[in-house]
Amino acid sequence: MKRVAIIGAGVAGAAAAYALRETSSTLTIFEKSRGFSGRAATRRRDGIYYDHGANHFKTDHERVHRIVREELSVIGLTRIDPDVWTFDGGGTIEEGDPERNEEPKWSYRTGIHRLGKRLALASEADIHLETRITHMRQEEDGRWKLEDQNEEEHGAYNVVLMTPPAPQSAQLLGNADALSEDDVQQLADTLDGVPYRKQLTVVLGYDERLERPGSFYGLINTDGEHDALSWLSFEEDKAGHVPDGQSVVIAQMTPDWSAPRLDDPSEDDIAEAAQEVATLLGEDAAANPDWTDTQRWRYALPEDIADADALKDGKAKNLFFAGDALAGTGRVQAALETGLDVAERIEAHGEA
Image 1 (cartoon, rainbow, N blue to C red):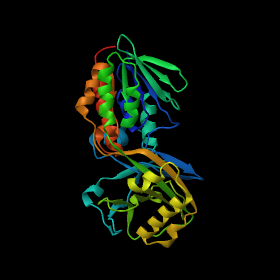
Image 2: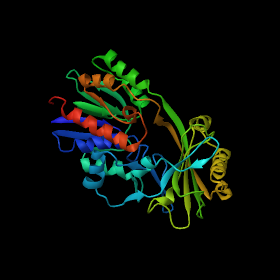
Image 3: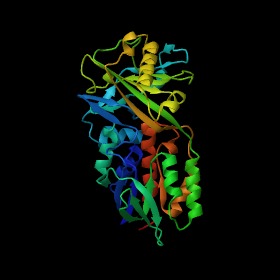
């Protein structure tokens, strides 16, 4: 029986566990937070659900479509009908690309986090939430033992799959006690070389419905020239998220705007973000939300793709990798695909 440890219950780690559920492996998932799906995250407030990280996912790839639409429960799966439009640095809004808008966009009535949760629970893995792996030690037989923040030891595992953002995985590997520390350090250096952008999410809630200058659900800045906003979307376009007569706007701020404000966004910063939203929409009411929320994403999106061939060298050390660094993008379905891909390689990885 092959014992597999998966570090991270984001969509990639949950997808790998799901794909390995019927193999001869026993699966253990370690997740540092209280929930699933990583940056495909949802919060709840007074009966309102809002996706404050990744805002939707698509099922344009056959494997993702089959899993989401045919294998997992579709109860609560909700399609987002309006399109995504674009805006430029000057704030000019235009209709989006028809081809990109053709593929349906999805969330769940109680939030996008349901995707990773359903994958993880369906895997029947042994799941440890609020468990941060802080150290790894390799035994003489090549298996790995893991230590958490409470100095509790777990393992030994024939395989460790690492799915956190690349810099976090690099830090963990860099401190690992391995049989061949130079080789593991090379893996750490490969991951540490993947740059990530910082991003602040500002959530703006209104007790009335905001007007929009078009029939869009979301707006994306395609030229990268807007001073403050990268993405804007309306949670009321997702069935079950927002009561009638209210609006919730998700504003993803640009990396340059976010970086100096990330550690401690002030009320003035939030007010400035709301004014930017009002200016873009041409809707004065947007500058005066009834409630607000923020989320700091230190590793929001990868700006490059990891060297997949270099990371495959980890196979000899019983180490595997998945996640957005392997996808080179922050799209949920792309991370899910990396989890499915790595599961095939783990399944073929020798005998325990």
